[in-house]
Image (tube, rainbow, N blue to C red; front, side, top):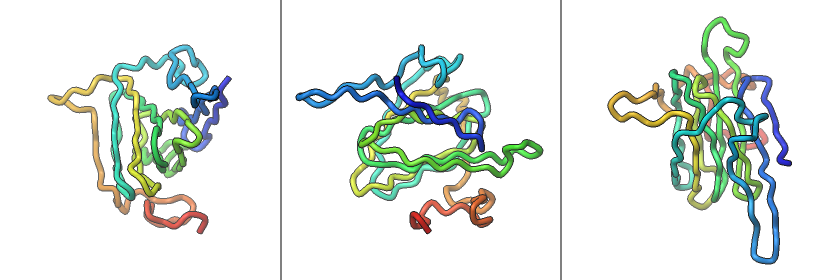
Length: 171
Protein backbone atom coordinates (compact mmCIF):
# COMPACT_ATOMS: atom_id res chain seq x y z
CA UNK A 1 0.00 0.00 0.00
CA UNK A 2 1.31 3.52 -0.79
CA UNK A 3 2.61 5.70 2.02
CA UNK A 4 0.91 8.98 2.89
CA UNK A 5 2.35 12.11 4.48
CA UNK A 6 0.08 14.75 6.01
CA UNK A 7 1.28 18.32 6.56
CA UNK A 8 0.24 19.76 9.93
CA UNK A 9 0.98 23.31 8.74
CA UNK A 10 -1.83 23.22 6.16
CA UNK A 11 -4.51 20.59 6.81
CA UNK A 12 -5.51 18.69 3.71
CA UNK A 13 -2.14 18.99 1.97
CA UNK A 14 -0.99 15.40 1.54
CA UNK A 15 1.64 13.48 -0.38
CA UNK A 16 0.88 9.93 -1.40
CA UNK A 17 3.88 7.86 -2.50
CA UNK A 18 2.75 5.62 -5.32
CA UNK A 19 3.33 1.89 -5.22
CA UNK A 20 5.80 1.07 -8.00
CA UNK A 21 5.65 -2.48 -9.32
CA UNK A 22 8.83 -3.10 -11.34
CA UNK A 23 9.55 -5.92 -13.74
CA UNK A 24 11.95 -6.58 -16.62
CA UNK A 25 9.88 -4.31 -18.92
CA UNK A 26 9.90 -1.25 -16.62
CA UNK A 27 7.26 -0.58 -13.98
CA UNK A 28 3.55 -0.18 -13.37
CA UNK A 29 1.84 2.09 -10.84
CA UNK A 30 -1.71 3.15 -10.16
CA UNK A 31 -1.73 6.96 -10.48
CA UNK A 32 -5.11 7.65 -8.87
CA UNK A 33 -7.86 5.60 -7.25
CA UNK A 34 -11.12 6.92 -5.88
CA UNK A 35 -10.97 4.34 -3.07
CA UNK A 36 -7.75 5.78 -1.58
CA UNK A 37 -9.87 7.13 1.26
CA UNK A 38 -6.94 8.34 3.38
CA UNK A 39 -5.94 10.61 0.46
CA UNK A 40 -9.13 11.61 -1.34
CA UNK A 41 -11.78 11.36 1.38
CA UNK A 42 -15.00 12.50 -0.28
CA UNK A 43 -13.29 14.19 -3.26
CA UNK A 44 -14.43 13.21 -6.75
CA UNK A 45 -12.13 13.91 -9.67
CA UNK A 46 -13.92 15.77 -12.47
CA UNK A 47 -11.12 16.58 -14.90
CA UNK A 48 -7.49 15.68 -15.70
CA UNK A 49 -5.02 18.16 -17.20
CA UNK A 50 -1.46 17.97 -18.53
CA UNK A 51 1.09 20.74 -18.18
CA UNK A 52 4.65 20.95 -19.49
CA UNK A 53 7.02 23.50 -17.97
CA UNK A 54 10.45 24.37 -19.24
CA UNK A 55 13.39 24.41 -16.80
CA UNK A 56 13.08 27.22 -14.26
CA UNK A 57 9.47 28.09 -15.15
CA UNK A 58 7.34 29.21 -12.20
CA UNK A 59 3.55 28.97 -12.32
CA UNK A 60 2.23 30.73 -9.25
CA UNK A 61 0.28 31.91 -7.31
CA UNK A 62 -3.40 31.01 -7.61
CA UNK A 63 -6.22 29.53 -5.56
CA UNK A 64 -9.77 28.23 -5.98
CA UNK A 65 -12.47 29.53 -3.67
CA UNK A 66 -15.33 27.20 -4.70
CA UNK A 67 -14.03 23.98 -3.16
CA UNK A 68 -11.71 22.66 -5.88
CA UNK A 69 -8.94 20.30 -4.82
CA UNK A 70 -5.91 19.68 -7.04
CA UNK A 71 -3.86 16.46 -7.25
CA UNK A 72 -0.42 16.86 -8.85
CA UNK A 73 1.64 14.01 -10.34
CA UNK A 74 5.06 14.76 -11.85
CA UNK A 75 5.71 12.38 -14.76
CA UNK A 76 8.98 13.86 -16.03
CA UNK A 77 11.59 16.04 -14.35
CA UNK A 78 11.19 17.50 -10.87
CA UNK A 79 9.00 20.23 -9.44
CA UNK A 80 8.72 22.30 -6.32
CA UNK A 81 5.05 22.43 -5.33
CA UNK A 82 4.10 25.05 -2.73
CA UNK A 83 0.96 25.95 -0.82
CA UNK A 84 0.42 29.01 1.38
CA UNK A 85 -2.46 30.23 3.55
CA UNK A 86 -3.00 33.93 4.15
CA UNK A 87 -6.56 33.73 5.50
CA UNK A 88 -6.70 36.00 8.52
CA UNK A 89 -7.60 34.76 11.98
CA UNK A 90 -6.97 31.08 11.27
CA UNK A 91 -4.29 28.92 12.92
CA UNK A 92 -2.90 28.24 9.43
CA UNK A 93 -2.42 31.93 8.60
CA UNK A 94 1.12 32.49 7.32
CA UNK A 95 1.90 28.76 7.02
CA UNK A 96 3.65 27.44 3.93
CA UNK A 97 4.30 23.91 2.69
CA UNK A 98 7.06 23.25 0.15
CA UNK A 99 7.18 19.82 -1.50
CA UNK A 100 9.70 18.53 -4.02
CA UNK A 101 8.23 15.87 -6.27
CA UNK A 102 9.91 14.08 -9.14
CA UNK A 103 9.40 11.39 -11.73
CA UNK A 104 12.08 9.34 -9.97
CA UNK A 105 9.79 8.79 -6.98
CA UNK A 106 6.21 9.18 -8.22
CA UNK A 107 3.90 10.85 -5.70
CA UNK A 108 0.39 12.24 -5.80
CA UNK A 109 0.35 15.64 -4.08
CA UNK A 110 -3.06 16.83 -2.81
CA UNK A 111 -3.57 20.60 -2.41
CA UNK A 112 -6.93 22.01 -1.29
CA UNK A 113 -7.73 24.96 -3.54
CA UNK A 114 -8.35 27.32 -0.61
CA UNK A 115 -4.56 27.66 -0.30
CA UNK A 116 -2.50 29.78 -2.66
CA UNK A 117 -0.43 27.30 -4.63
CA UNK A 118 2.00 27.01 -7.50
CA UNK A 119 4.86 25.09 -9.03
CA UNK A 120 8.41 25.56 -10.28
CA UNK A 121 10.32 23.23 -12.57
CA UNK A 122 13.55 22.60 -10.65
CA UNK A 123 15.03 20.12 -13.11
CA UNK A 124 17.24 20.64 -16.15
CA UNK A 125 14.69 19.08 -18.49
CA UNK A 126 11.08 20.03 -19.24
CA UNK A 127 8.83 18.89 -16.39
CA UNK A 128 5.67 17.05 -17.34
CA UNK A 129 2.81 17.26 -14.87
CA UNK A 130 -0.58 15.63 -14.92
CA UNK A 131 -3.06 17.04 -12.46
CA UNK A 132 -6.50 15.93 -11.47
CA UNK A 133 -9.09 18.42 -10.22
CA UNK A 134 -12.41 18.02 -8.45
CA UNK A 135 -14.27 20.71 -10.41
CA UNK A 136 -14.70 21.18 -14.15
CA UNK A 137 -13.02 24.31 -15.51
CA UNK A 138 -15.56 26.93 -16.59
CA UNK A 139 -13.94 29.45 -18.98
CA UNK A 140 -16.96 31.76 -18.62
CA UNK A 141 -16.66 31.86 -14.82
CA UNK A 142 -13.24 30.52 -13.80
CA UNK A 143 -12.68 29.55 -10.17
CA UNK A 144 -9.26 31.15 -10.03
CA UNK A 145 -7.87 34.03 -8.09
CA UNK A 146 -4.33 34.97 -9.11
CA UNK A 147 -1.32 36.77 -7.68
CA UNK A 148 2.12 37.38 -9.21
CA UNK A 149 4.69 34.60 -8.72
CA UNK A 150 6.88 37.05 -6.78
CA UNK A 151 4.14 38.65 -4.67
CA UNK A 152 5.91 40.20 -1.66
CA UNK A 153 2.83 39.53 0.54
CA UNK A 154 3.53 35.78 0.51
CA UNK A 155 5.98 35.45 3.39
CA UNK A 156 8.32 32.52 3.89
CA UNK A 157 7.83 31.56 7.57
CA UNK A 158 11.41 30.25 7.73
CA UNK A 159 12.98 33.58 6.81
CA UNK A 160 10.28 36.17 7.53
CA UNK A 161 11.00 37.52 4.02
CA UNK A 162 8.89 37.34 0.84
CA UNK A 163 8.89 33.79 -0.51
CA UNK A 164 11.70 33.30 -3.04
CA UNK A 165 11.00 30.58 -5.60
CA UNK A 166 14.65 30.86 -6.69
CA UNK A 167 16.20 30.53 -3.23
CA UNK A 168 19.12 28.10 -3.44
CA UNK A 169 18.38 24.74 -1.80
CA UNK A 170 19.82 23.94 1.61
CA UNK A 171 20.66 27.56 2.48
